[in-house]
Image (cartoon, rainbow, N blue to C red; front, side):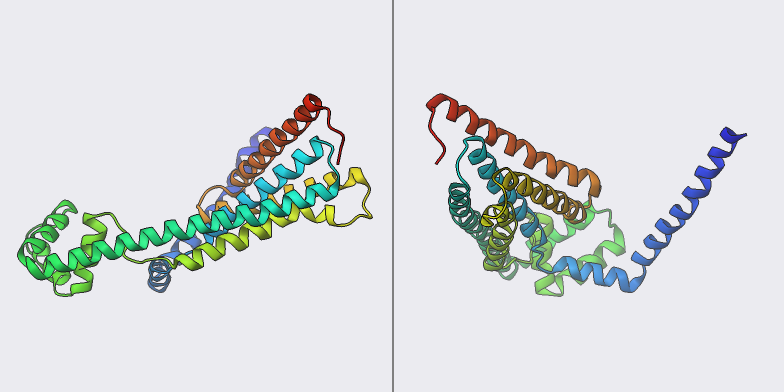
Length: 269
């Protein structure tokens, strides 16, 4: 009797969940929700910069912490090396993000100028390109003619269509400075957490690393959850992957510290 009830209980639990999912989907596909979502996609998103910057900051700094502990260095050395890495590596990553985002924007600007020139110089040829683009999308006959006429009647929409469908570029550019600053702030903010326990001399020597490990693990798990939301992936899996990445990096660094200490036999500083 008990086993006979289990499928019914599972079905009863699944139905409310299915209804909640269906209700959520219906709300997301109401006209106003769709309009907001489309407009949001046109905006400049920097959440991914923040998430990746935070992960990199946490991983690299905690790896330094683990390495110094493995090498039996003092908390002062851990803080000095950690802070030096935090600022230098954070700036390097932010500068790289700035340059990459700026390069993407420059590419879009150059392509836009070229497409605008072609529209003005050979409009019939560019109009034919639009026609073939819509033909590949399945438009035919009067619907095709109307789509081409509507698109080419607005110069900005015309050029944006060419950028997206012919060249595979995103017409909306991101602010390179904001991308770089977001990356730097996230890197330094997350990377500072593993160092916090070492800033308080009242904690016992063995307690520094334990407290840092707990704090960093919680950070990795939280960032992984956020990454799952941003990348539309299962949050728990994303969190565990991020935690595993940080753990592996820390183990490698700790092992390197222990090995080098044994090889060179240096006393702790």
